[in-house]
Length: 297
Image 1 (spheres, rainbow, N blue to C red):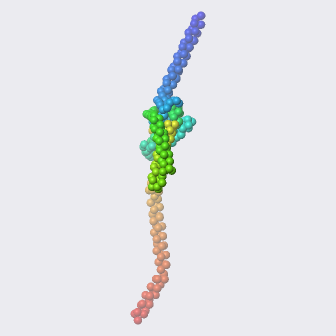
Image 2: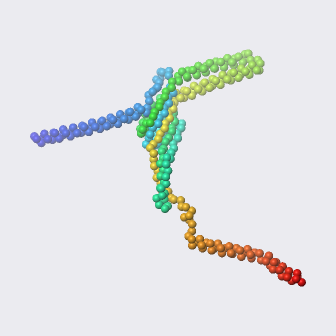
Image 3: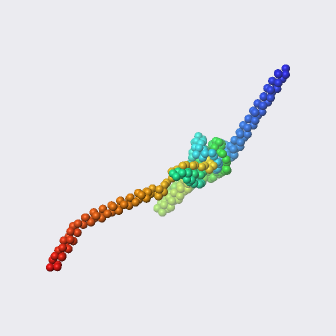
C-alpha cells in the first residue's frame, strides 16, 4: 500500500513538472510571437489604404533605415520580395566603406594587412499600392534594428480632378479656335496668330494630361526608399613584402670583380679605337720623315 502511494506521488510530481515546462515553453513562444508582431507593426503600415468604393486617391511613400546582419543577403531577399509582389527596383547602391587600414610586418617576407569596413546599401523600389503593407511586413525578418520609419500618404484626388477639368477646358477652347480659323480666318497674319494660340492650348493640354498620368502612376505604385547597413567588419590578409631595391644589390666582392672587368673592357675599347686610326698614324709618320728630309735640304 505504501509503495502504491509513493508511486502515485512520484507520478503526480512528474506530471506537475512536465506541465510547468510546457507552460514555460508556451510563455516563451508567446513572447517571441509578441516581439515579432511588435516589429511587424512598427515597420508595416495600414495608413491611408483607400477602399474600392472611396473617391480618395493617395500617393503613398515610405522611407526606412534599419540594421541587418548581412547587407548583401538582405538586399537579395528584399529584391525577391519586391519581385514576388509585382514591384520593381529602380535604384540600388551597394558598397563597402573603408574606415581604417593598417599593415603589420610579421616576418621578413610577409605583412598582415587589416581592413576595417562597413557595408551599406540604398535601395529605391516601386510596389503596387495594394501590396505596400505586404512588402513591408515581409521585410521584418531582415531587420535587426530599426532606426527610423517614415510613411506618408498624400491625398491627390482633388488635384487629379482639377487637372481633368483643366484638360477639358483647354480641349474645348482649342476646338473653338480651330473652328474660328476655318470659318473666319482670311488674312495670313490673323491665321498665324490663331494657329499659335491653338498650338499653345494643345501644349498646355498635353502637359496637364502628363501630370495626371504621373500622379496616377504614383497612386498605383508606391515608392519605398530603404537604407540598409551592418556592423563594422574586419578583413585580415597576409600579403608578401615588396623588397627594397637595396635588397637586390650584389656583394662587395662581386662589385669589385665587375669593376675590374669594366676597366679591362674600356682598355680593349681604347686599343681598338687607336688601331682604327692606323692610316692617320702612318700618314703622320711619313709626313714627319718627308719634312726632315726635304725641308732641311
